[in-house]
Image 1 (spheres, rainbow, N blue to C red):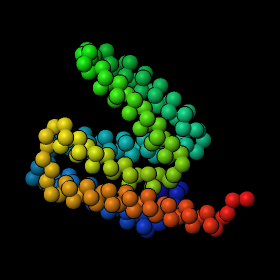
Image 2 (image 1 turned 180 degrees about the horizontal axis):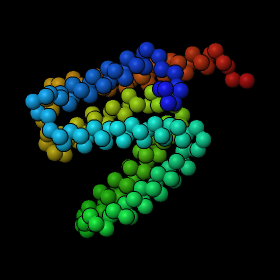
Image 3 (image 1 turned 90 degrees about the vertical axis):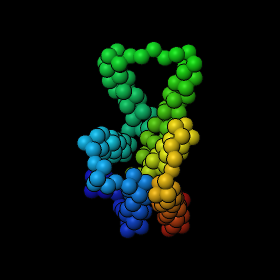
Length: 183
């Protein structure tokens, strides 16, 4: 908020806080199971947050396609440098999954850039909490994980906070549309 200069009301802060509580309920962190490896997901979350912040800042001067081009180019260069050291041959049966991954990654990434272009970052961020819910669903369906009660309750809280934010943005948009009618 201080960096982007966006207005954040108490309802948005509440939705963000409630969503964060839902995420914490899903993760159920406790001191007895602390591992230094927890630094990796925390670092990833910080980098993701910085990416969202920078994407929002850049959207003020560049269109979504420009941002999409530059992030793709930087990613291609970085992977071209690191890739040869970790190269593993892809089996013929896995190419369909690789193509699906690329198509959904491209579409999702572009839509995220477009969302930051059209909305305040504080409106987009609670929706990104849904990633944790989707990852849990994949863990159950693909890897046979078992969901505990705290995970289901936390997921419901996350989804509820995200939906509240979307609803609240819709209310504000309608209010602004009636105050400032189109000419």
